[in-house]
Length: 329
Ligand code: HH2
Image (tube, rainbow, N blue to C red; front, side, top):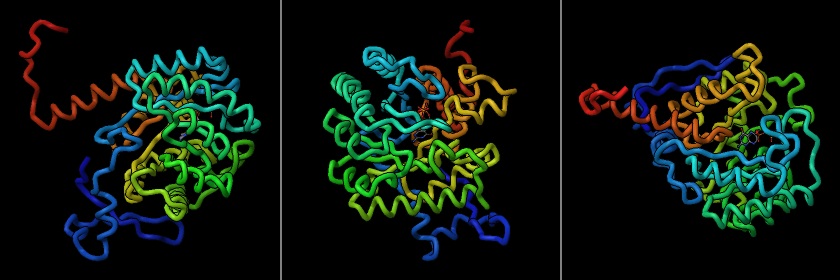
């Protein structure tokens, strides 16, 4: 990925503004750290190269997930679903046993472990790179023993004082996702002065805490957490300001799949009718350099990204030769 232009974010009384910077300004001492954060190649994440936008397939072993609650609650169905996603082109499988939808009640840790461990074990043996979607250190440990390589924590390791140390000690990688509040109440009048800048500052703090606990930078990915303590305007602002998050210097994940942001943009489309919007946001995120998209519809996302990537190459090379495939429609 490259940058054609760079803006400096200038704090203001009510909202920050953007000041265009000549690219040469990045060579100066003042912006050396920013230049490094923006332009250094992202290292592979748990062995997955981040040289293009990678697909994280969601495996919800839950009765109540907002998008597919109950469909994959039995271990057999969850494992079969994970295998299907791998075949369809998922690079990582994110296995979760506790819904984080707005209003969701917490799940006892023992139940969460009972749900995810057999599924992680089976999919790991099948060759998948596994992430466990949890905020509980006990579940992190059990998942790591079963073969998980990544912890995806919607509390950015803040749920327990043990979390960061646990991830560091187990040698796992982590997705630090931003959430304001907790699922039971996070959507009750969320408020920010400027959502992108505040989410950025919170994630920057989360990265520093993870580093202080011993995690190396290549093991950390950040995620602005669409829909987690954010209203529609906040979500749209985050998607607009996505490139700013590269300045944190880490891989960037975006999870918009089937979320209410899509329903609100399309006549309250029900959850199962949000594929088009999910693909639109995945492509938008890829266009803004997101390294990972967390999705429910892997095959469709894979195809959308493939076509979009090919079009990008074709645009860069000049017009494609239409005679390559004569007669094909
Ligand atoms: N979204 C959900 C759960 N975990 N993790 C990251 N890093 N980013 C996200 O955007 C994200 C996430 C919500 O989606 P889902 O898992 O399908 O729903 P539920 O939490 O109800 O199981």
